[in-house]
Length: 121
Image 1 (cartoon, rainbow, N blue to C red):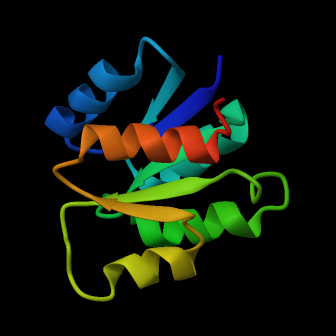
Image 2 (cartoon, helix red, strand yellow):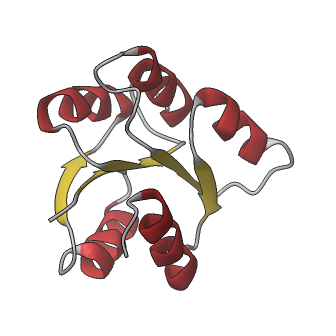
């Protein structure tokens, strides 16, 4: 079973992601960017769902930190944000995200992206 790290600090958003994904994936969770980097190193997930607005270390910097580590840099990171500001998608891609989705999440689009980046047949 593929493992997904969810880095999310808002309980409601975390609960929704867990409910949506728990039947099909092994899930690990971090509540801030620093913990996200630590859990990524410890758990070696197949994919990371990274909220960009996080406490301690934001998702932009956490993604850059993960991508700078040769042991973690191969892990695809999908950026998640409630902000749909012009330029945020490019900023996420520049930080190392493979894609960027805005909240509230379109569940079918999320599943499509997970299938793409986890190479689910």
